Length: 398
Ligand SMILES: *[C@@H]1O[C@H](CO)[C@@H](O)[C@H](O)[C@H]1NC(C)=O
Ligand SMILES: *[C@@H]1O[C@H](CO)[C@@H](O)[C@H](O)[C@H]1NC(C)=O
Ligand SMILES: *[C@@H]1O[C@H](CO)[C@@H](O)[C@H](O)[C@H]1NC(C)=O
Image 1 (cartoon, rainbow, N blue to C red):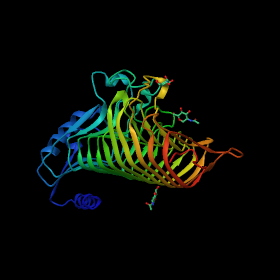
Image 2: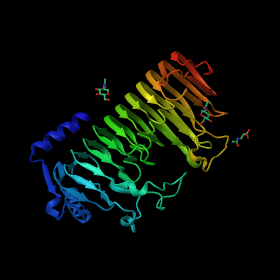
Image 3: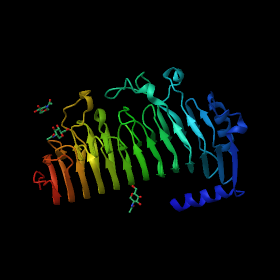
Image 4: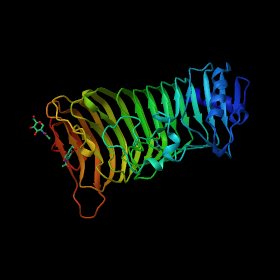
């Protein structure tokens, strides 16, 4: 897949005749950071999407800043590849009142666009700080005053690439993939303050065959969260921190049936994150999370490096105490090293009835980052085996 995108990018760069380009400036965009350029982008998008060349390209030129109100770029389009060339910068409205009348979950949306390539050295700035002081607690419904929009959402996009961009300060999550297939996010920089609430880096849900590679993510919530309905997910070469680490879940919210499988996280460094690698499920859910591997992970002064939490319930809101639970199995942690700021470095808290099965640890060495502090592991109903692991995991049941 990388090869296809590379070829297309080459062709696009060389301006071969298979490509038709549309520049937002030709559609009346001001690019002054003040004028609402959404109407111009929408007009340009219409032509991009109707173009029948192999590659249809929307050019957002360098050296300019485009203010966009919430906007959705909708497909399907006629071209095999839609190239969204972000050389300039895109900024969001910087006050809540400018979102009045937009009943949206996302600021920049792409829906049903296949062969989408969003690429360039530009910046997407969600200017979301106005939303941060009063975050929603628990599972507040959409469109409430507390719930800001996700900055960038791809919905039902098949074959896509997002590369090279910088993403700043969203009102909520930076990038959300919902019901997408066959995509790669690579070489992006995702940045928001460590104390900005709900600013997940990349949320992946209902998606299949997705790779997130070689990127920097420093934000206020999960660097990457993989949730319900996702499978064949590869995360590699990620530098995460500040943030809440890399999470599977939360799954089973409000008793849902959720499934996540075949997730591989490798070659990642987590620095001073609030949690490290975590699988979190609510009580009362139905379904499973299985075949999950964490390989070659390095922790630098992380808090709570390794967690399986089948009693997830943040803020103590809407907590349940149910007999059903999401089944967690076939989880492997190997080649993991580093340091922890907390003494409890491994916490495997599994459901009373189902437990967690085939949890495998091999060559996991996590030391204390604090002089004189002893580290330890904690398990509750966790089944599996551990070899060459420190602190010892004698609490793991066979
Ligand atoms: C591991 O990730 C780093 C970025 O964090 C990257 O530079 C390096 O090439 C990766 N190594 C492998 C073997 O994938
Ligand atoms: C949950 O239910 C179990 C069994 O019904 C009970 O023993 C336990 O105390 C309950 N926990 C909470 C937090 O309510
Ligand atoms: C481990 O996590 C569970 C679930 O969040 C929590 O209730 C428990 O207190 C933790 N164990 C320790 C030793 O902190």
